[in-house]
Every structure is written in structure tokens, then in C-alpha cells.
Image (tube, rainbow, N blue to C red; front, top):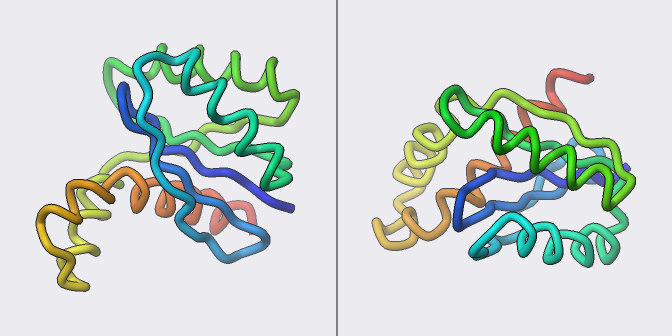
Length: 128
């Protein structure tokens, strides 16, 4: 079953995908609002035959906005949407990119995509 992982950001969404246990980076979406994000995610879900969506849920101010986004995404795509704790995933993503000697500019650009991979991998590890 293909699962889409999302690292939610106000302007940048990191995306990862898995089929089974392996998670792969899918890319980043640049958006100006949540409706634009949803309209860009619909064809991505269709093209990749996604059966479930996992959205990272941080502590703090964005929780309400992310849950509303997840609810809208679930209604529009008719796919199950689950939330995965993403506490410290951004820091872990940066740490892992430093370990593999990614340049600073690349780390800043790829942080959301790496975070999406970590969020989805954490979710998959917990359900198995």
C-alpha cells in the first residue's frame, strides 16, 4: 500500500512516499495557502496511487491549522489521513544531512523533504 508522508509548512511542504517499509523522498511543494496545497496534492496522490496520508504533527501553534488541513484533505481525497508526532524531526533531518556532508544551501532546501521521510518512517515503524 502506498503511503504519502507530509511535513507541513506554511509555505513549503516536504513530501515522501512509501510502498511497504521503504520510504523515498518525493519532493517539495511551494504554496501560498492551504487551498493551493490541497489542489497540488490531489494529482500527486492520484499519480502515485496513494492509499493513505501521514501528516507530521508538531507541538505548538500549528496543531489546529494542521488538523484542519488534514480534515479538508481527507474530505477532498477520500483517503485516510493520520497524524504522526514530528517532534524534533527537523533537527534530526539537519543532523543526518550534516552526517552525509550535504552543503548548507542543500540542507536548507531539502530540510522539509528529509523531515517528511523521517515522519513517514516513524509512522511505518510504529505500525509494524
